[in-house]
Amino acid sequence: MELSLNAGDLDVESLVKEIRNEVAKKRQEGVYSDARIGRAERHNLMYMADSEELLRFYLNCLRDGVHVDINDYQIEDRRTGWQGKFLVKTKTIIWKLLKFYTFRMWHQQNQINGLMVTAIESSFQQYEKKIAKLEERLAKLEGGDSQ
Amino acid sequence: MKLAYITPRFLPGGVVGGAETLIRDLALTSVQVGHEVHLLTTCATDHFTWNNDREAGEETVDGINVHYFKVNEDRNIEVFLRIQDLIDKGREVSREDQQRWAENNVCSRDLSAYLKQNGKDFDAILMGPYLFGITLESARILPEKTWLIPCLHDEPFAKLDIVADMFRATKGSLFNSEPEKALAMRLYDLDESCGQIVGMAMEPFEADPTAFAAKHGLDRPYVLYCGRQEGGKNTPLLLDYMQSYIERRQGAVKLVLTGSGDVPVPESLRPHLLNLGFVSEQEKHEAMAGAVAFIHPSTNESFGIVLLEAWLAGTPAIVHARGEVLRWQCEHAGAGLWFRYYPEFEAMLDRLLEDKNLNQQLGQNGRKYVCSTFAREAIARRLFAVLEGKNL
Image 1 (cartoon, rainbow over the protein chains, first blue to last red):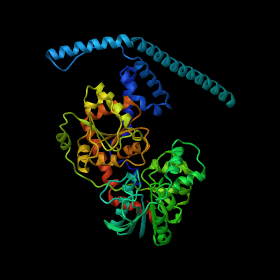
Image 2: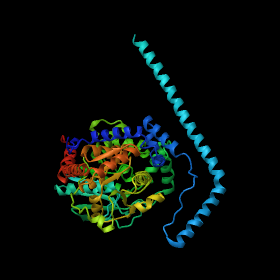
Image 3: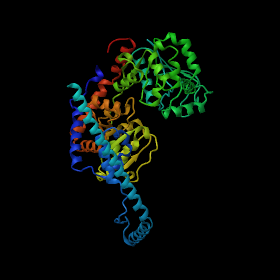
């Protein structure tokens, strides 16, 4: 039928496969171990949930991005001259005050986040082990039936 | 043949939904190949209020005899919204409540009366989209002559008993894609003969690929999405992906959006985003022609008209792998790539930015595909093969 014809010579399915293989290699090299990717996947989770491979990747991203960053950072201002210096000084003081009053809260939040991810990962691994054992048992039982 | 098309709205020169545009276009195709066409629609112009904004009556537009009928003004919107909410949440809704939902949906007693009186004079009656009261009511009047143009989506409304009844009782459906037909077969337990794929005619256009960037002072390559900006279209996912891409690639590209909607934009993406709202067709085509890629992340489409437009502009597409229809279109056109998660999206966009030859080849494939498969003559051939019962 007319609609089932591929209009071009380029095989896009092979191209997608090729890109997927490249991505898989890069993933192993740690190219995508990045908290920003974990954040980007928040709206994609429902599509990843039924793929073990993608869910495992998401858990890795989550681990990278689980902690709220409370370290000091370089405070800058786009203005130059005395105005710029004054603003950098003011912002630095505000940041120090903020950090002083919120450090305890963020520290506790980071502990909770870390524990949550560990719990999710552990249950994921436990289920994986259980399923592997069940599959092994099933294979044995099926092997027994065929004999 | 004498044909009747039924659609909720018809606005000469105005903007209506994709399904309404499709039906208008099929009516126009039928006129152009010499058939007598009557289009039955409502007096409403606004798809939120469904008020009778214009007078009931008749007029001829581009050779189509358009009949306007009043929407029932006594519909109980409270009941409609209450049941709609339950359906939308996937709750069990009794057949009686489904019927009450349909009756209080956008219906027109006047249109039904006209169809009851004159329906026998038509050789075929074509109507859609599937979830409007006007379609559900009209399809019951002469089901043996009725062809649905359903624009079916995998959503809770598609699973209603009254919708299944309609698909089973009518003569058949005109689908836009194979995945849409497969969905109907799966949901309503229908066989292969339940309908054919027809699609919509696309008019080729020429657009200057440098005009849009010059007009808006864009100094970097850009990717584009045109359409409603909302959760249902997966726009938040596109914004998140582009935020990460731009951060990881130090602002290598800009994101351009056109169309209505209001989705929160991440702070760090704002300097890299150009959100234009509604633009003219000409400007949209120029934006498409100059884009590195057209990105359509929606996973629930019955047909990607905007994807075909991007291909006519010679621009390749990147779509979500879970969007079965859009992915099917990309596969068949050989003009787009589909990602499952961010790393694939990043790699695909990198590839299209770096490999100009590949980008061009995909774009050319797209244009060739649309010009051959969605030419008006091809649509007319498929449409009348279905209506006249010929094999495709």
